[in-house]
Length: 489
Image 1: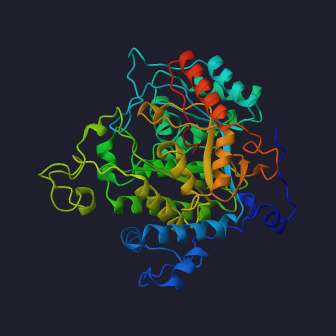
Image 2 (image 1 turned 60 degrees about the horizontal axis):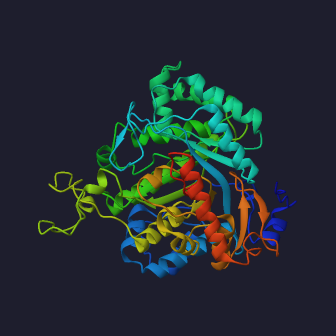
Image 3 (image 1 turned 90 degrees about the vertical axis):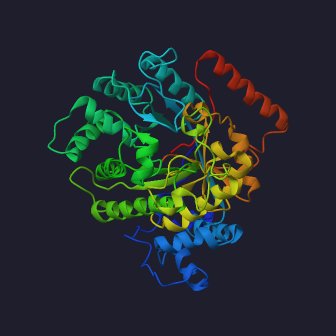
């Protein structure tokens, strides 16, 4: 196992690694990055410098103006400067984990999903505890540090199935961080198990406490999609709404757990909906910091969102993917329906505007500038490919995500990118940074600045690529699950 780096002071950490090494070593987060200045122009270099240094905060209108008017390269430069202010000039990170989708049986009917199955379907599955433990054992043998465990909302699984699983994991693999169960899963747990409590929050607190005592360490940001209600209602039928999703995370923060937030864009939403989504994350992060920073009755230290990751909708094999692309029909006229805010528009929700590479980079850069109180921005190489993932490190991202042994949700929609640890390190180094392996809390486990670095030991990259493909083919033939990398959040 890699030995964690433990600088004795923040200045030593900055000197050794080009920036703070952990969230706890950064100066305490203020409630906001600074005051808003709604009258300031985004062309004002002084104002943008204040944004970079956390001395001012973007308003929704300014963020929307940035998105629509600032040239891509200039926007990326500002986002990169903000990233360097937070994370230094040198190190960019990745994590070794495994994404375990324990069941594909789900009560929701999201139109963007190609993964879910109904009970009784020929290819429906729920993995047994022994099989799940075997997967974690493979991760541990490969030097992994965490599992990302999510699944469909399966009404057939009792509460003890989850609690027993968590206890078994911690008994056998106490060093593995369990990053599991997204907010929609917790809402369905409340529905399925009817825990004690007189309101949703108290029921969540009871349920989450039980799971944390059994071994749950943190909660991933799955199921975020888009928070805007008219959009969410159309693409995520029977899935929890934005306030409920945010409440789940706020309860986790009260219990001292770190979480992540996500956004899936490039479908029927407008650009303002993306900005609105990020602003809600920022507002609720402010709330967590204000309410829980000094600890709570349930934890000595409050939790918060540690990371934000966004990625474009993957249409392959999904019901939503069959919706026509905007602008390809003679009847498409005027502005995109998602941008107009006109819910009565006859084509609202009936046309897609998918996002390509430049729109992805623009959206990610905006997220780094808006989310002044969120530590990490993750690049989504899984959906965009290794090249754009690498480029994203110059558009505000400080983390390239996961060397992942398995993933099934994104792959079900047709995305098949995968990378080994040497390839991931090579991409980070090729972007001008030193790669470093991290854990879930962004502690640096190994900074690869010497000749024994994973990428620097490789002499034949074609062999490395072939070995990776062979590994994936072998694993795919052994199970019914496609195996690729995916977001670790």
